[in-house]
Amino acid sequence: MAIVEFFEKPGCQSNTRQKALLRDAGNEVAEHNLLTEPWTPALLRPYFGKEPVSSWFNPSAPAIKQGEIQPERLSEQEALAKMCASPLLIKRPLLRVGDRCCSGFESAALSFLGLDITPEGHTNRCARDSAHPAPSCPSPLVQGCEPANIEQ
Image (tube, rainbow, N blue to C red; front, side):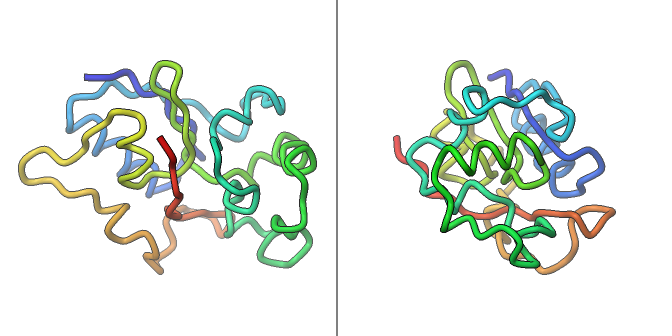
């Protein structure tokens, strides 16, 4: 299948389930800590494709929930600078297969990467439950799966 570079928040239960789905479908998953990766705007930008800047952010990040950062008011350069300085702001997971990148874990993103995670008996739970209300990580600094409009 594919080698999937998977940038996650360690300990996130949603990311753990997502990696299991990828592996169960026969993919190799290379795990990376999203929070300690040395991000630069040039490295981070490809993960967001043609998505609007506001969709690049983790809506559960405390700075966003508390209104300190309003993604819809930021330029691309401002958004990238803020996310590089504080990776908790980044919508996750970030996924890379070869030279294709995306953020989030839903059917459109996986399809864009050429991945299929629905082997017989499996469903893409994350995509189905994208608005799941249960906390997905052991800390309140979490993000669940948020839909994205990946254009091919």
